[in-house]
Image (tube, rainbow, N blue to C red; front, side):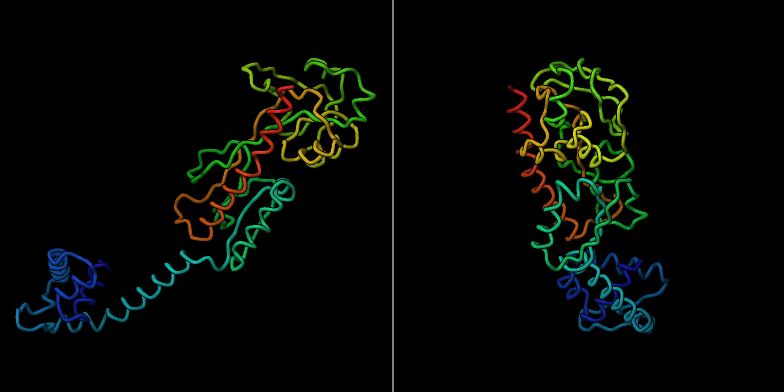
Length: 306
């Protein structure tokens, strides 16, 4: 009913149905139909119908006086909200995992804020998947399978996992030429990946490895540090180890094999219109991930083909 109320207020202010039709870009028949509908609901006539002059009835005068200020206030509030949604200025709340945000994604945050200096970023880092709605976040970055929770989501790419160890560890450890040789090694497992499904690069050949009991940790970064310190072999995301592989503080002893890929997503509340700031962050992150993951996939392909 508010839309019809607002329409009547505009008709009264513009002194005619034809003028209101033109100003609001509505067909004249629609304006007439909606005015009649409002009058029917109120049980009274609001406008005297005359081709020569426009005049409100007594009821129309009273209705206009009662509701014109309300319509004006609501339309101002609507316009302010529209400007806020469309603005690239102000707060943006983002949830993201700690490890990848402090490592692989660290340049993303600075580059985004440099590109959008008027955005006030509230970045909440946590390796637990906090509820986006409860945290009142605009958007969240997630890794791994996403439950069908009614949230919108878009994939950003996949991060392969690699078997890595330090040269010092391999120099003193038993020979490692096949996956079955892992049974003779100390394996560092991350709690969310106790079993290692492996696939041969470029081939439809898979094996499932159950690492022998060695070291276990619930933090990927710590597992990477243990591997660098020569404490064993770990299966870790390529994003966590690429710089160490390039500096040769870590190597891939079985580079023809890769572990499961970890899909990366952006998610946001399904019932929420995505504002301009969140849209800008979404586009920026998609572009960043495309460029950042490309050298990783190239490295895996080139080393796995050896």
